[in-house]
Length: 456
Image (cartoon, rainbow, N blue to C red; front, side, top):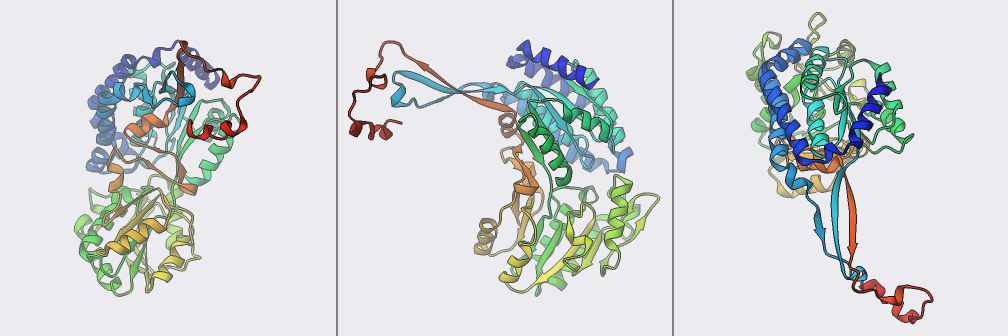
């Protein structure tokens, strides 16, 4: 089945139809209309998978996708135009330009934490750029995968866009095929597998991975505002967000006030019993739920800590000064558990930040602009925010992506179009002049050749 699907997309791409901007725009509009018609059903499917609140499903899944679609539909003609560049004197007379063109068939592999948005958002960029696509949604969010499949089948012929559902075996089959581009969102561990498979065919990739995202609260921070914004960014989607703050580094003079403010904000958001809150999601998979429970063993709990096996519920939890070698601090938590660690000097802060690979996100809460500037300049990371969390993802003009272990490539808005486009360099030479000095036998003095650098 997979082999036949790949062949059908090869055949369809060879017809050149996807290179027609009108064709791309037509199908982007059809996708937009179907998502609008199915928005309630999409939210219901996400809720069935892990009880994600409707507000969060709308705000962080369907509405983000619809915003991307509206932008792509409006701009795809502009993005697709050739871009002229200044001609080189060595090519005179000439016209020189860059022409974006699609790669061909694209494989998009999506995760379970934002199962709709992280499947459809990259698809928009792939289609706007003129590619065909095969989507592999996560089998761990089956209700959402099913509605994605239904939407795609209604909007697209399978030789243009298709959905392949299934588990690891299906993913392995897909990765064994030759693609012109692979876009993967998920863990660093699986990302390495995808990268290795892509290397067999020299296939370019985008890897949207994760990391241990630090959040610094310095001595000059507005503690109450920091607590509110950190609690929101950490506990939305029950902490299952790749750019959520993973751990807090708070100046020791602020720690007590910050912890109390954080407790108050969590209670304000979710009530005295967050399990009864309609605004707090559940952990998507049993395996991940059990892993989060294990991380809490032996920790000093400042707040929360309760779990419910029947619901895969983990309460918003604050952990006091965990050991750096504990399971909680070894890798990305990806759940509603927030370690709080104090520091005294900037040197100590640097030692702690240097323990990990380059993160996907980096957050600083401070009123000291010089401190803000030092932190943002000194440390490598995918994207960051000063005095807030997560919100940098909302600007379509900012590329979203990681660096090093947290990923390769960035997308959103025009960055998505550029990601899925090859930039073809083109030169058209005039025929009315042909300077003979470049041809053998070479008669131009060597001292003149050494001045050619001024012509390039």
